[in-house]
Length: 323
Image 1 (tube, helix red, strand yellow):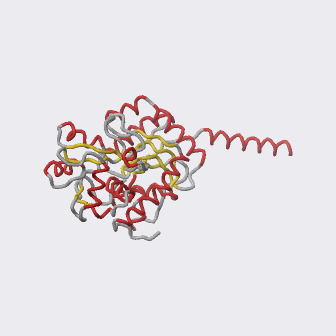
Image 2 (cartoon, helix red, strand yellow):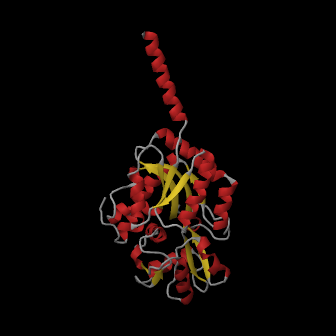
Image 3 (cartoon, one colour):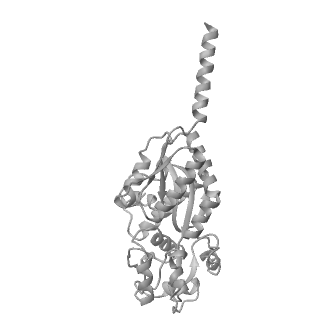
């Protein structure tokens, strides 16, 4: 009897080990919180294709739009923890708690890997008197509130918050620059060229057409390093002497409490896809910033950003919570 018991125990251990080693055994769903056809969807589908090759199972992209991204992100939080339903989170996920649109925060997700960061940039009209960030900051500080306006994004969107955070770092009330919301960068740049606004905080790739046409200039990018495609544009940190980065990002997440082995396998596969020539070529061609951070670095990034976003949103009157 003892022999049979030991054999049964050994078989159970072997079965458990095999099951764990076989993840994934069935198709995986990747939730995208925005409509099909946009930048987030395009990156997610490229990633999903690569993950299929790495993991050997279908990875289906499911668009769960609605509520300015709340619906899709909430679906990620409430997904089963077995690793077969994961999400492609975006920067907006850290704003919903502060606006009161959702209860989840960074800690309610299992961070797997950050794969994209598109820093905001400081665009001005080609004919602007400002030659650098130092001159722009001095003017904004000195002139009355409302003298300068910015556009090219929505109120409370990632690029708006990035610019507001930069002003705050420089000791300027973010409300000194009036936000004129627009449906994307293109109409904002048109308004910049027409003289209706003085600042566009959108990414460098979004401003390329206007810069090439000689209608705008970028005097800074809000990232740790210069953009290789725009080497002539200095970082804000180079000019102020203070580290600053801000913009929009995208990364793979699961619900809190996700199976650790599944999360580790997904992280490994995501990095392999990220490092592939196909993925890097896609990101470069489309003008997306390829920035990889594994689970630990991504977790730190989310926790720090959750708090910094809250501070900025409070300063511009968008937060409905104190803490």
